[in-house]
Image 1 (cartoon, helix red, strand yellow):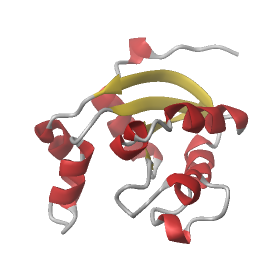
Image 2 (cartoon, rainbow, N blue to C red; image 1 turned 90 degrees about the horizontal axis):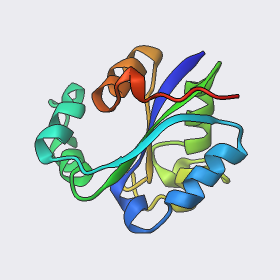
Image 3 (cartoon, helix red, strand yellow; image 1 turned 60 degrees about the vertical axis):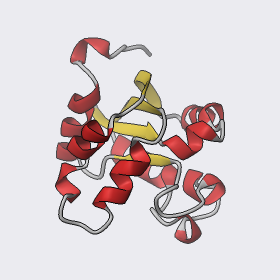
Image 4 (tube, rainbow, N blue to C red; image 1 turned 45 degrees about the vertical axis):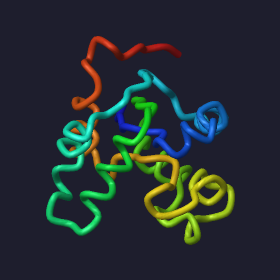
Length: 140
């Protein structure tokens, strides 16, 4: 089984979309094995997005991600990265397919409601940032 990190971003938490997003995750057969709400400090956001430190959006994204609480979760499945990314939709909500989370709830490239790891190696690093292995729950 593979794992990926999912984040419900501050914009979606503020707009009270947590339940709707979790409902879509479960309705689409994705399995949540860990879940919690955290409030990232600016320094934690900078550390999480360190791979983007030289990109023009780095300061903006770290300000945004430390602007309010987020829901972090670990999803598990054979093709979980691809399945979660398909359900999320394209980064730009206006370019996302209809029915995706970002298309239906996102308001901009930055305020697009959700985050997901882009590869297995990235997922391992991102999951370890928020979770310890003992926090995972396995069930059928």
